[in-house]
Image (cartoon, rainbow, N blue to C red; front, side, top):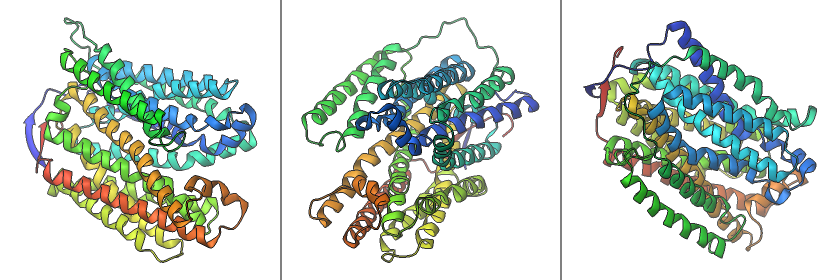
Length: 500
């Protein structure tokens, strides 16, 4: 599994068994909040726009939240290593709940988008700190269980989000989408405050926080991710706004490097990329974020436009991977204990590449069970890939570096998804335009699905566009395979801890 080195005693594992169960319940509630808020708004957009207006900018309800989550992950990771997990998680939960309350009180679309950004500022703390605490609470041999639980919560919440949002918008009011967060978040917050106890840290030396680095990282990430999210949507890729944002983003990258090199305690320390294990996992999970865009963004449109399925049935085709992914993740420990973290991840991503490569060879128009079976297999393959890497990389660092390490992994995965959405969106629209003589894009096809039958030429064009996206996703999986094979050490340098 990996070479073993001694480590300092684990900090949060001293929690009593009864209290640890309560803390795990709080982590699962917090994870559910973070997962739900990424998807629950989608089906309520017509009601929100009808009430507040602002149709031209409603996409920022999603983009603003995800941008805030992504760019704050490295900051919260470093803060949790500096001040402890509990204060960061509590502060993040409070900000998230405040943002939820403000969203429910929003009076126009601009205010709602701003308050969604506030939500995202808290959501970054929830995502990163929950994953870090899961590693703090359990020894290496028990971590797959808690990580599988969190994966299950994330999967179920992500799938249930659109349905729950639609029900609340249709039978109550869209504001309840945000108000429902308050009791759930309050319960998680109460459990954390009451039951999570971290040993007192040495206060002889006052912690130094790299606020300049935090601001630079936030600005750089915000500008570059905005350029990726809005490029090809709000403006053309080679337009003046796009080029200006990318130019400013590259300049801010230089500022980040300069500031972080001079900082005593940098937000993104150099060792995150100098250590082969962490660098390889960061790159591999960035590729995972890239390839996940293919099924999550494009498969529902394919299922409706090409297979002729209703929205609910199309959602089922996608949702089956949320069954096989957590099951495979839970069972992965039996594999990596025998062949190691890297080899298990290689097995998983190699299988995922073959499944993604098989999608373009599905018959046209085909039957619904065919992509459903592929999604079931893809979930199983990715469960075997992701969890061993997360558990493995968390086990190579001590408590004081685990927050930063976990945040860097999640940041790379989130960034990969943003890049994937921009890249594969351009690919799909390019194929669609070529097949339809330069008219239309995939968004227009998706909006037109409610109007009735899709023309045969459009169906074939959508099929070819999604096939091209899946081929690109297979290339991303192959890239992850090569990174692990060439960069990652054969055996992860695991630190020995009490209880292992």
